[in-house]
Amino acid sequence: MEQIISVVQANFYPIIGISVVTVASLIFSFSYMMRMKAQGNEFLKEHPDAAKVYLTVKALITSEVVTVHTVDGRSPFRFAEGGKSGFYLTPGQTEVQISYSYTRPGVLHKNVTTSTGVVDKVLEVEANKKYLLGFNRKEKQFTFESFAG
Image 1: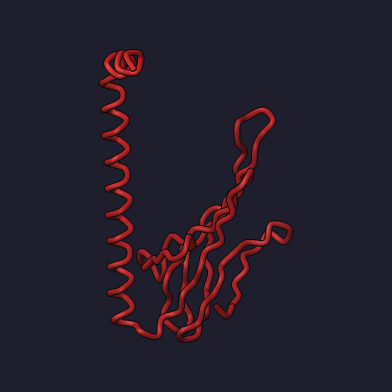
Image 2 (image 1 turned 180 degrees about the vertical axis):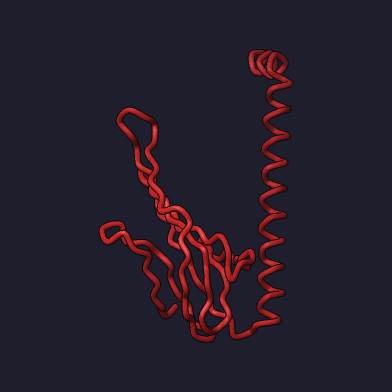
């Protein structure tokens, strides 16, 4: 017990610093998620027929991420549910700016990331439907398909 006390006393300031950073990170993450949810709810009040577009995110040894940058030149209204995230679109055609990045372990470097850069794409959605926006690495093209769920 005395050893534990002496270790805590010797490392008091680093322990406090790490604790403060951890708590601050949790508060920031929680407030960001609440703000994102509030913006999404406000968007849904104005557009109750909005479609949900889920973004592909895969992460194990390699990671694949599709990111939406703008929707009709504005920031997208995002949502997160059940570990999945995405954004809302109003029915009809919408111009979006999206990108895809793929990261894998490297041989000479820690990680190697390839990206499409920002790409302009027109997406067409129907009211109250769900869609998945992904990327086919073999064909090097974005995919966009509806699904039931």
